[in-house]
Amino acid sequence: MPGVVESIKVITEAKSRRIARYAFEYAALNGRKTVTCVHKANIMKLTDGLFLQVCTEVAKEFPAITFNQIIVDNACMQMASKPQQFDVLLTPNLYGNLIDNIGAGLIGGVGFLPGGSIGHAAAVFEQGASAGNVGIHMAGQGVANPTAVMLASAMMLKHCKLSSFGEQLEDAVYAVLGAGKVRTPDMGGEATSAAFTAAVVDYISTLRTADAEKAH
Image 1 (cartoon, rainbow, N blue to C red):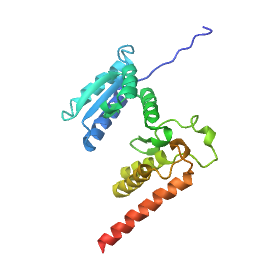
Image 2 (image 1 turned 90 degrees about the horizontal axis):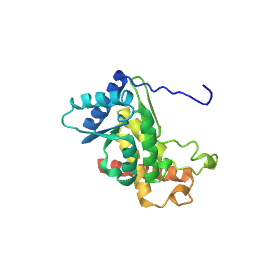
Image 3 (image 1 turned 30 degrees about the vertical axis):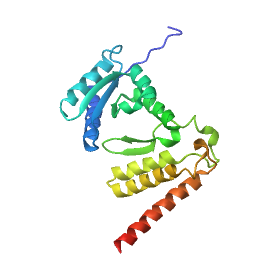
Image 4 (image 1 turned 90 degrees about the vertical axis):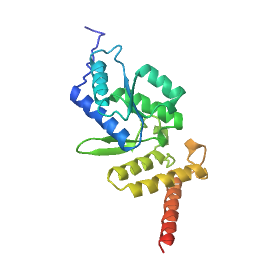
């Protein structure tokens, strides 16, 4: 019928169980206390209902982890008003995209938020929120905030079991941010991407020099 479209939402038990188990295993391995399932099962009773059901079943396998559930509308409002109440959020893909962009906005923009897409056979680490339309005006100017990419690289190093290197990179990024002397325009400064990167590299060099001196 002209003027009418239909979209099909597919949720499977197997994939819901896989992502749910990953969320709880991540929480257990990283000292997280709570996993919250984000859904719309009150309206999408079959698709999101299945997702919530499977997440609830998997939660029983991890009694040390507190399990909560929240409707996506409320989750977005709570993220904007009191984000510190959440620990690990377990969501279908669409809701996750919405929530991580809210998170990016809360901490200063897409330039700060790292992300990873992890599967059985491969893993990809990149900015955690959509940056294409937001940062298009900075293309080719060398002033984009590289924090998200650096922190995503730290996540990659940890995923590859190179945790010490990942932690060094994280420490250096946070130290440069904390010092506040080298800031890209989105942070209220005038530094270039290269200048921020150089400051991070210099800090890592300082850490390594200090470690070498302690070793002797």
